[in-house]
Length: 129
Image: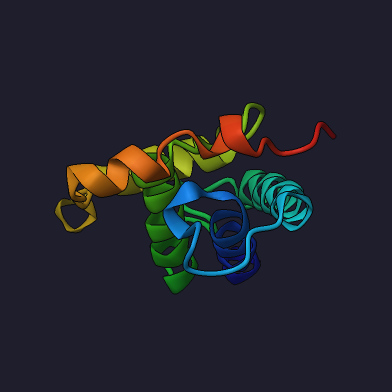
């Protein structure tokens, strides 16, 4: 499920972000569909995280799912300005717990990349539920 969220986020970026304009075909429609799918996957992950009741997605210990989720969520927010959706409290808590790890230091990107990547939710917002 985390891999599906990462895939949908990638499509959202590639089809909707100015960072990819001129590098590949852009499609507002495809980006919007992917944005909605990304948000739905995160809400589903949130539901599953609530069911486990642990500090991480699958319970009390870190799994590969947490690593992929952390990388995806950190990249989405850090470079593109796409936060974890409202209402995903369990997912936000898992993210916050994982972010405390020294291995989860956020990447720094070149300013020129920030300039064209930031603001994806404003350029191509996820459709409302």
